[in-house]
Image (tube, rainbow, N blue to C red; front, top):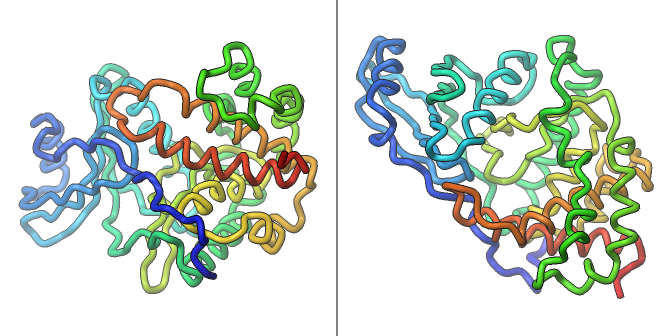
Length: 326
């Protein structure tokens, strides 16, 4: 897989992480009490867009862990995502290649939440994407779908309303109500088509798989023998190929190969109904296009640039599939 000739380094998948030392003392103390040992080092991890802390911890007895913690004063939505992730992880089958959740500290709706995980000795995929690493991740997505189809009984109750906005909210209609001054010409030209197509997305993505729906390089850890997929806050029930559609704009943004060829040669993509894929991709593209023109959320600098760069690739792919490249 050669590097794209037009490749430029993508915006970083990182916001403004809180240093571990700034996590409230009561939260850190509760963790040390549960561990039964003191924390002697905390190495902050910069990838990802939560404004909270994310750190690899080493404690006095030699054990290592990974913890992430956030409070509502940093961003009102981030604790909700941590709580949802905790619920999903607690119900995932053992076969799923995730970082195992070991303990949760939760002060309730108005307070802090901390998630403690096993520490994974791994690395994020290189940028630009390398053929061997991308092949490993694509194979892992196929295996993940096999493991999570049908949806495990432990997750059959998953509240779809919490995670369906990506496909149920009419992003393109919202763009059309008040087109941003810097809206790209292609989107402006084809708004009516995009609104109609995205309106079909809720039915298009229906299915009986549990999908992660937020797989990106920064949510993947590679080890010598495993592909570990982390950050399960946005898991939803739907068609297995949804994970490819959500993943691929970031792949292209980060120097990956032709998306259509990747999709059509993947076991999930080759079986997908083209009309359903187009509707779902229109919704994802609308989400990215709408959000790139919004103000930065509290504590998440860089998110809009990251979404904008993915939006360019999603629109390019959708235009090709629809024959609307003019």
